[in-house]
Image (cartoon, rainbow, N blue to C red; front, top):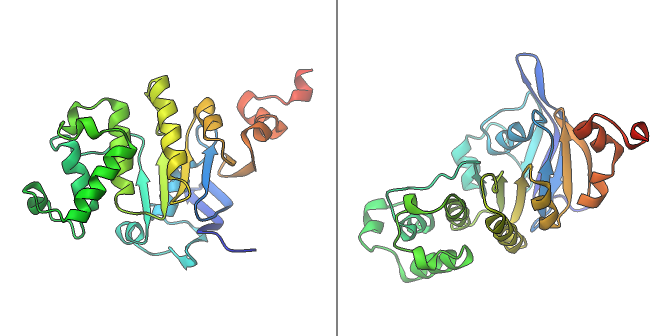
Length: 251
């Protein structure tokens, strides 16, 4: 069996005796799109914090492209090819859409040069491509602060993609979005899979169904089950976690 792009092995995280994660195991393959769901307190945010180095596990290991991430600071983990999108969009609201993306694609980061037209031709092409995949070409010269909430979410995703991550971690991307924006976000994330491995955490079950991807269910800090959305929705363990009863109990 080929090893995954990302491997979590026996991850346990304890906060003052409370087990936020317990013996959690998970594997993601290159180019995979995976959804992670679970009730509040299931450990979803801590799970992402461990991958990105924000939280150190008390036991277990995280392997990325075969290399352990243990002991590495957050910025070094990011440079290895892991991008994280938080629940609230983090964009530079006083810069334009184009300028936000210019900062994302430049290496090394040179903000003053970028703001005065210092991008190379290939970087300008990259910015145009990123605007096209999130449908923001007509708003290229808008300040990011003037965008809708959904458009800010897309801009941040484009900024992360501009850094060419192998793994994209997306935390609740459709919270507060309209139905149309939610559908467009699902299409966007599906289009990114293949070129990137995409892991999505979300509460919106219709959105998860729209992704049409494998689903991992977390409960009390460990993997409860995995499968398609149709499979996990009828799993008695999942029904009990979400509804407090099994199908047999309700008959």
